[in-house]
Image (cartoon, rainbow, N blue to C red; front, side, top):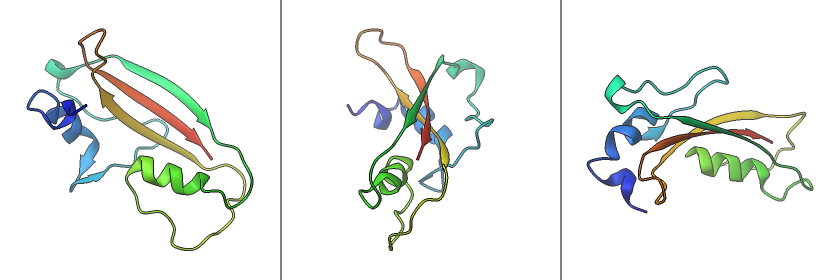
Length: 104
């Protein structure tokens, strides 16, 4: 669980942070990793649906490391957020970069 904060995981975490805040990437962008740290990217699309005001947008903001909106406002249409999450699965022992497309 603490792999990202270890010396082996820290370069991956640094690639997605900017001034200790999680960087926001566009749909066609991705973190720049040195060739020695190149890892496979696993892509998932997550569609969040539910009643108004239950916290879907706040959940996406929390996962992205950005502050949640202080006041409730209804999301019009769909907001797409691209989020990268480096991880090291126990089974493989090799790091992977999860690319999550969150559709709210």
